[in-house]
Image (tube, rainbow over all chains, first blue to last red; front, side):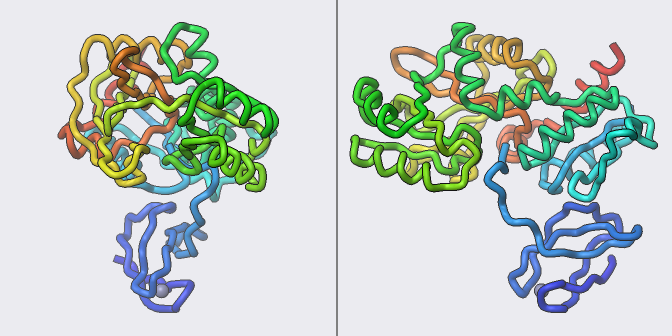
Length: 56
Length: 283
Ligand SMILES: [Zn+2]
């Protein structure tokens, strides 16, 4: 597990070591977050909102 | 087997594909499109990849990344052409109709007045759908001219891509369910009923319940015929049942979701798909 910082509330978010970018995590503060990779390290950003062109 | 996975959100399906390819001993290269930059003069990737699987949830990203990857000389499931035909409901409807597949009676109008006028000829209720869109979003049923007018006006003031093209369909009086079947390669291995007691829209995204479907010969033939017409290797086809007219094809999805299908059928769709892709690559 890796501990990352929630970009919204600053709280801790733990994710799997082998998590892939694009994985969504819901934080206890209510934020919907998205795992990303920056300089080979996992990070979090606020998830993109559902787009007009989304869906199967 | 080395498969590239083009995706923008890691949904259940994509995670499952990662897991199942591990089990099969295939190498999977996830390509997170949102943080990838493509240069037009660099038409090569560092990795050696046999084939790509398109899994972007955004239609725009799916279309564009399929196209770019194809220009690099790779095959993509599904390819750019196929996605164009599936994502635009006008293209799908006309193409299927031309090839004698039953589709809902549909007309396309380019202004509100004629869109309204021809609904009377078709008979109410009618269904208005965005030309592109999914999960049942913005799909509306109008029981009379008043309601229809409001929907058309509403559409014109949205910021949809095709806000001034009106796609209007007869309302199929189906049972409280519709059918979703999957085409994988040249097979139709699995499908579901999507049952909604409370809403005429049977998208599972809108709370419809999935139930296993027994695929009969007729629906298998229709699905394969649709696949021949629109192309593509992996499709999700939505079908209505009409008491008099039989099966009516409503939509074709080029990047289908299948979480519920796997769950209720106890069918490992990811594994099936990956094996089929491997067979196809070997040919
Ligand atoms: Zn938080």
